[in-house]
Length: 239
Image 1: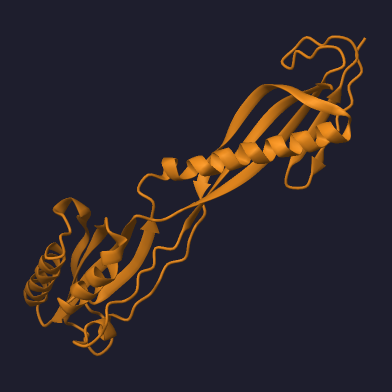
Image 2: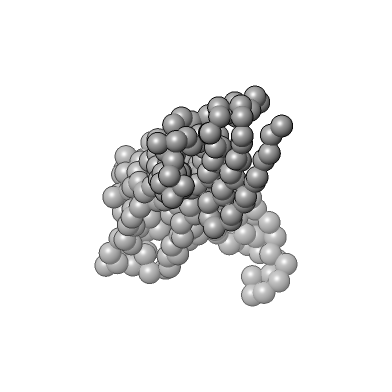
C-alpha cells in the first residue's frame, strides 16, 4: 500500500512533492526512500539586436487622382533611390500599400490623396538613423518604427533556456539540502518555450528630419530580452 502527499507552493516556482514508501511503479518509477520533486522555473537572457525594421510612406494630394498618383510615384521612387544609395537591398524593401482616394472633408475636400508605403529592413542598425533621414529628405512624410530585432531569435533564446534550467536545478538543490537529501537523477525536462520580451519603439517628426541641417535621428540598439520556461522532474534520495 502506498501513501502520497502532494504539496503545491506558488511563488514564481511551483513545487510538488510526492513522498513514497516502498517501490512505486509508474511514470516516476521511484525506488524506496526516493522522492519526486517537480520544479518549474523561468530564465532570461539579453542579446543585441542586429537589424532594424521600419515603415516609410509618401502621401500626396492633388486635384485629380492621376496627378496625385503621379506625384506620389515620383516621391516614392526618390525614397527608394535614396535607400539604395545606402546599400539597402531590393530584398529588404517591400511594398505594403498603394492607394488613391477622394478626400471627403476638410480644406482639401473633393481633391485626391495618393498613398504608398514600404517596409524596410536595415541589416546594420548603425545605419538605420541615416536611412530614416535619407528617406524623409527624399520626400517620405509617413514614418513608423524602428522595430529592433535579433535576426536569429532561437539562438538569442538559448541563454534563457540555460538560465531557466539552472534556476530549476538551484531550487532543487535548496530543497534537497533542506530535507537532508540530494538530487540523484532527472526523470524529465519539459520545455516551456521561449519568447522575446516586447521592447518599446520610437517616434520621429518627419518635418524636422527633412531640414537640411538636421542630424540623423539616433537609433540605439540596446539589448533585447528573451524569456524561457522549463519544468523539471528531479528525484531526491538519501545522501
